[in-house]
Amino acid sequence: MIPSVDVAIVGGGPVGCACAALLARAGVDVAVLEASTAVTPDPRALAIAWSSRQTLADLGVWESLTATPMLHVHVSEAGRPGSTTLDATTAGLPALGFTVRYSDLAVALREVVGAALHTGVRVTGVDAPVAADAPATVHVETAEGAADIAARLVVVADGQGDWPGIRRRAREYPHEALLVDLRFEHAPAGWAWERFTPEGPMAILPRAVDGTLCHTLVWSLPPQRVEALMALDDAALGDAICAAVGPRLGRVLQIDARAKRRTTLAVARPRTGPRLVVIGNAAQTLHPIAGQGFNLGLRDAAALAAQLSDAAQGEIGSPAMLAAYARSRRGDQWGGVAYTDGLLRIASLRSGAVRTLRGLGLAALDIVPGARRALLARSVFGLHL
Ligand SMILES: Cc1cc2nc3c(=O)[nH]c(=O)nc-3n(C[C@H](O)[C@H](O)[C@H](O)COP(=O)(O)OP(=O)(O)OC[C@H]3O[C@@H](n4cnc5c(N)ncnc54)[C@H](O)[C@@H]3O)c2cc1C
Image 1 (cartoon, protein in one colour):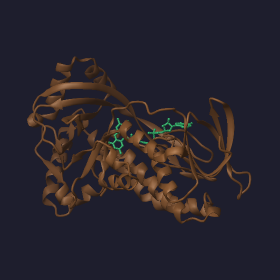
Image 2 (tube, protein in one colour):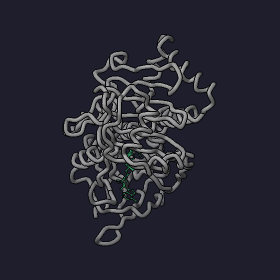
Image 3 (cartoon, helix red, strand yellow):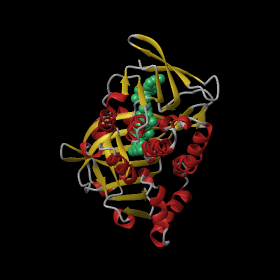
Image 4 (cartoon, helix red, strand yellow):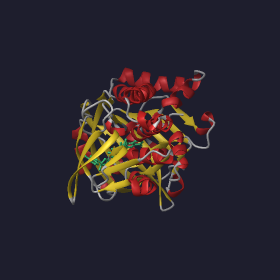
């Protein structure tokens, strides 16, 4: 293993690799330490905001991805009048965002990191520096045995975990996410849907598979309901989904895959420690319904890279540099947490009167000047314009 490096990144997921690629481009000496040896296939469709697309294009990974554009997002309340549509033209953009497969993105980002990515390297601990100007020590395990790496800055992008000076507060949501890959009879291209149903909110994202328009549905539901839906055969599951979606998209023609995920809200506090910073899911793990997680993590990576690009080598990992990074990210990080958690809280209010109010609220977005633009600024699916 390398004995020392300026920046050691723990975790070569999409956020860790994006951070490494941005840093390498800025001439920073960086190494990514990734426990797995290869990306595990994961069909998860990630909604990528327009701004994230730009970052990925700058890194040269966008062209290699199969991306499905989202030009319109329709938001509605099931069984109540009132809905709104967010359009790319309102935002003045060619597309509101795109969907890509998680594993395609993970592979493309690993490739761009190249030799700075060390796979099969599990980080087992980090020791804080013994003196203010000393490096941190990263303990790793590889097939060849244990080793230590000295680093001026340790960037934790492992998606989880407690590290020196950082505590992660986590709470499980009382609902699970049902994930279904499927095809609808009449779904038009370029559209995504966010729907408040009496049982829980659902998002439907478009996703092109070998030139055919397919969709991924994410539905937040009580665990017993997820269990019951998972036990249905394809035809019955399709009928249950149609009943919740309404007639707009026609019948469910095919179900390709189904899965369920527990859902958690976790926030690291503080997000920096001595020569250490947490980014991406390690800093904030959000419910997938609002499609914010990767987009927020990528903005963490870009902001950190910007701080480090401007820093002299002696400043890398200094308290002043880390404080400036933390300040620059506070609003966006809390905004992402508050938007996603708030959406779930609003969605979990199920009384008839609240549902009517939600429907009216959506209708009001079409009338109140600037309201839709404001929703787009944070918005469903992490669009964050
Ligand atoms: C069903 C679902 C749908 C989602 N949809 C969206 C969406 O539409 N839009 C969006 O923006 N986000 C979405 N997200 C969130 C998104 O997937 C995450 O925010 C994103 O993957 C976080 O990336 P990351 O690199 O921070 O962490 P991860 O993807 O968790 O990667 C962490 C990496 O660290 C490695 N690692 C862990 N521990 C160690 C260790 N000790 N040593 C070395 N390596 C280690 C792991 O092997 C892994 O490769 C969704 C999530 C789910 C579950």
